[in-house]
Image 1: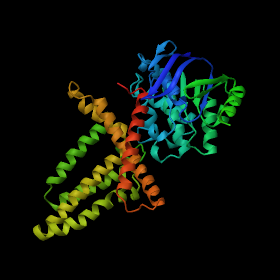
Image 2 (image 1 turned 180 degrees about the vertical axis):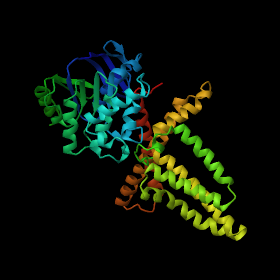
Image 3 (image 1 turned 90 degrees about the horizontal axis):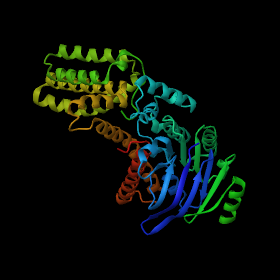
Length: 226
Length: 197
């Protein structure tokens, strides 16, 4: 497992502080992050991939500073967004998965084989040549996940990956995330997605207010929002 | 190209995109200068053979030819008034054959193959032009067409639901705002996928 470390992290959007003095070490296999809208949880998740860099403090992934070594960090950390439409770049399903490997040193046959096996694993092989924008919502999110995992990152961060999905597709994505070998960090409002997780962090107003086993942390979260 | 590719493994599908692009340019240039009706008939026959060889379903061919028929329905009679029916039909045949050939290229070539072809074409100019960047720009342009169409559709529905059917501002403002938000999100997704250089 990778070790992700936040040290004295602070961040603001304009005048509005979103993270206030966050110190964390994340080394477990399955970690959930919950909190109200605007609590800072998505900013925290984006920092792991270097999409947002802290105003103060440092974030490191296996010792690599996300602010200074962002490219190396992004090779290790894959990121799945809420809306898969914003993540799909190429017109067809197989092309979009292959797009992630465009800058890799793999040969064309190796890329094709990796894309084929990834699509098979995600149940998208039959749609390989189909237009990506015509997939269902659940299939699009599976494609977004496949496009991230084809690069074989060691960490997968998912920011509310099931928010736009119906219950059936949300369960499918949840099962897929649970089955991954990688370290998985999920930001979510759908608490059932965190079943079987090792650790849950609760954020409120930019501060960590609970950091415990899922039962204890979610109990604290429910009290907070009650 | 936006989801128009018809999967297949025929010779036409497997031919390198750069070769197809070159042949398309040369063939259209030749069709443009054909003078005799029998020469044009032979060219149209050749295009039909290529469609058969590529095993493109007839409804797909029809879908590509219909839009140009509307244009020809106006242009051919107008041309006939000034240059006679033979010249007008020759012009119509040249346009239809050229459009059909271009459609054949679109239907049998994936976008990534076209991007690779563009990069190959730009390789001699790599000191001045970054082929990867141009390829990415093309891919994003193609991708943004259905994305924008979806935004327009959703905004029109929301506008209808609120009873603002006739207002252009009620359409343009949310479409522009949402398009810019989508562009920002797409940029963020590209960075997350390691395309940040």
